[in-house]
View 1 (cartoon, rainbow, N blue to C red):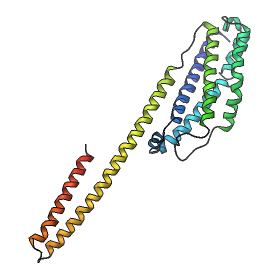
View 2 (view 1 turned 90 degrees about the vertical axis):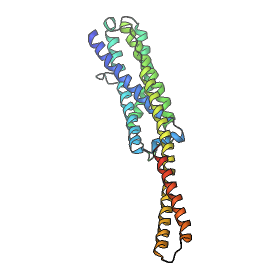
View 3 (view 1 turned 120 degrees about the horizontal axis):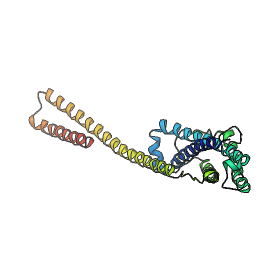
View 4 (view 1 turned 135 degrees about the horizontal axis):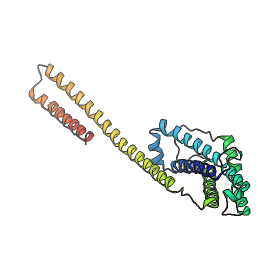
Length: 253
């Protein structure tokens, strides 16, 4: 493999690692949610339920690409093998022992990623629960896998030309934005609950107006009704109309 080809494939692998750790950061942040946040997300579970599933599937696929043992894949294994075969051209800044050590970093995670690939982590739940039962195990495994991938990649990259890549910024930014989404959804649910209470009150007021209007109509139709007997009905209708006006004002603030 020529150095330029190594650099091209290194850049592609860096993008795969960036995808994996960023998608995983979003998914992990969505696993850490309070009852209020979960309830807020569940108001739109037709959106968030498939999104959570898709995020899990996506980071499994991206991590698989990183740790794929196939020699034809653009993975850490294949680049390490190329560096060991052409060390002078592709890894002049390190030793054979160091390259072997980088390869050993990947071994514990191959079993995990193979299990993930077989299972495909396909469980889907009706609701976005505060946390899924399998989430803690997946998070521990993925945390270790992400750390090993970044470490191995940067050690290999440094062995080639001294360059180290920074992968922390975007996952951190994406995790923060995900927290903001959770907060907004929880606040939106609370606000929707207040609106729902106001609507119920408005319906009750409207029903009172309807009843008062019916009583007044009956009284007016009764030619024998006196003004004194009608006055309380008129007052009741006025009060109900005032309450309805107050309700509409509160709805439009």
